[in-house]
Image (cartoon, rainbow, N blue to C red; front, side, top):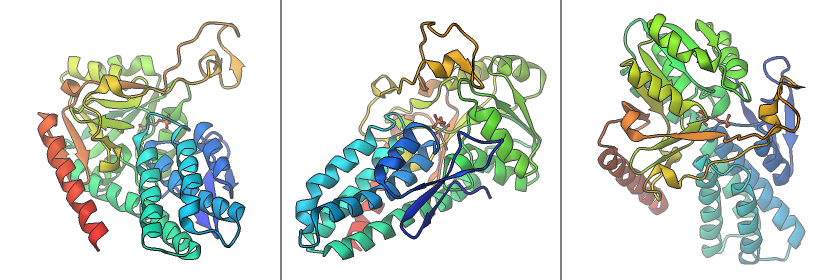
Length: 363
Ligand code: MRU
C-alpha cells in the first residue's frame, strides 16, 4: 500500500505529492509551520491526509510552544499559544473540514490534560499518542468503508472517479478508491475511468499511478470526456470522495465533481460519495455555507510548468464545488451507507458519533 506520511522520532515525513508520478520524494517537517506550507502547497493533500498531517503538526506545535516558554511554565499558560497554532493550521486550507476536526481533537485533549493537571511532558506524550491514533484510525475506517461500499458496487463494474480519493489522500487504503480496492479484491471491478482533474491533475498523476501500482485496470480521460465515456463505455457507477458534507447531504469535493454528478444523473448512473464521519460538518445546514478555497491564478494559466493562457489572463480558480444532495445516490461511511433523506440519515450518524465521543471521554 502506498505510504502518504510517516512519523519518525518527532519528525513528520510526507510523500511530496506535487512531484508524483515522476519522482518519489519525501519532505521532513520538524516545525508545524513547515506542515502548514506542505498543506497549502499540496505536498500533502486529500481531506483525511490533511487531517492526519495537521494532528502531527499539533504535536510539533505543542513542542514548539513548550520549548519557547521554558521548562518552568505550566501547561495552562501554553494553551493560549497553542490555540494560535491551531488557528494558523485551520487557515491553511479552508474547505476540507477534516483539518479543523483534527486540530480540535488535539486542542481539546490539551485542554483536558491541563484541567487534569498533567505535566508538560505527560501532555506531550498524550498528544503524540492521539495523533498516532488519528493516523491509525483513518486506515481502519477506510477499510470499513471499503467493506460497506463494496456492497453498492455492481458486478462487472465500470467506475468513473474524479480527483484522487485514494491511499494518497488518506493515511492508507483510501475512501472512494478504498471502496474500489475492496470490490476489486472481490472480483467485481472491470475498469476504472479516472478524470485527469484540471487544474492540478490529481486524477491523472495520482489516481492512475496509485491504481496502476495495484494492477487495477485504469484509463485516464480528460475532464471533458466524462459525458461521452458515460454514454459509450458502459459506466455503471460513479464514486468520489468528499472534503465536507453538511447536514442536508450537500457535498463539497474537488472542482468538477458537481458536473460529473449532473452527467451521472443525465445518464441514469448511480453517483456515490465515500467519506468518513470526520468529513461531516454537523454545524452547517446546507452547502451554500461551505467556504470554498480560491487558489492561485497560475494553476489555471499554466499547464505542466508552461503558460497555456496569456500570463495576465483573468482567472477563476475555485478548488472545490458543491454537489447538491439531490444528485447523490448514497454516502458511504464507516458506519454504513447513508441514503436520502439525508437530513434524517445524517442526524442519525451524528447521534452515533456523539455517543462514541462521550464514551471515549468517559473512558
Ligand atoms: O485539492 P485536493 O487534492 O486536496 O482535493 C482532494 C479531493 O477533493 C478529494 O476528493 C477529497 O479530499 C477526498 S480524499 C479521500
